[in-house]
Length: 158
Image (cartoon, rainbow, N blue to C red; front, side):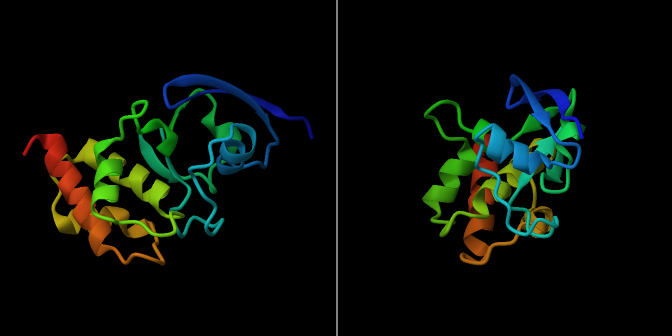
């Protein structure tokens, strides 16, 4: 099979890559582009560790073919910080000690950011619902939810 040439935009930067027709976006991000934030936790879209946004829609990058990113905007956890300045969600995850092994946190951060872009003032129930596709085997979820709620309030200026 011949490789497919893809031109896309990742975290605001124009990016080109070659991929096999069956290659996933997760594999290209990690193996070709050295963006290792998204993790392969399950490979079947059940854990959320590989979450990215594709044209503003939260997706599991293990379920998206790399060729499908053609002409689209991809956002990953690597695009959240502004240089050395952490995104408020990243800072609050640290402040609330809401991480342990770190496998799930990149996907949770991307999912939480997608939520707050759609709804800057979510209820706790809405945050729990939105993050339900992201599994954490270490921390439980209370500190994660508290961090997201705190970040939302800070981002609103509350």
